[in-house]
Image 1 (cartoon, one colour):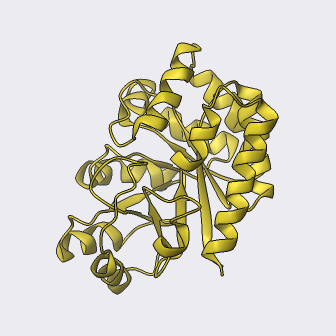
Image 2 (spheres, helix red, strand yellow):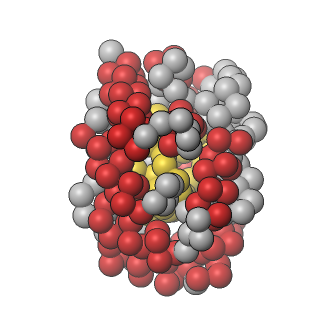
Length: 246
């Protein structure tokens, strides 16, 4: 069965809602939660997720909020932290990994940590048995793909196009998929531009999908009550999980 990774931004609109939403998403078929760490310059993310980051920061988000939310979600579902290197660096990467170990968070997704620099901190991730998710992109050549994926853990994050999340572009990924599978048995998941309309087509040839903006656009919709946000997001999650496994 193909897997569904769902992204939400932590603490939008508040900590308790993040916990309730995450656990509802699990019931709706989300296999892994990607919990976003709000940051002022989310360079890989489009305007929807960027706005969610701004909302959290305007509400005085702190890492203590992340830790509170994580402590209630991670014991109940597979969970990763998604964030940019600046917060990890400022708090101390090993301190983050210790917290991940304490709560049961299984790894991290760090879009602005290049492969070469990731190798420098790999011993820390190995020490705490946490995955540092590897990225491949349409711009990568075969040797680069081989280098990145041959020791990948948990799953490989395939970026669907060169650009930012949520922009809905598309590219022929056949070569990338074939090359990844040539060098790795680690599951390959596709992200960027995946929603209830595109998920079936984008999931062809891969082991799972990563969905962010399609959920977060409802998370930040001020016309919806909290219960309506949960209903909308879980409905979409169910639809995506069904479509990718038809």
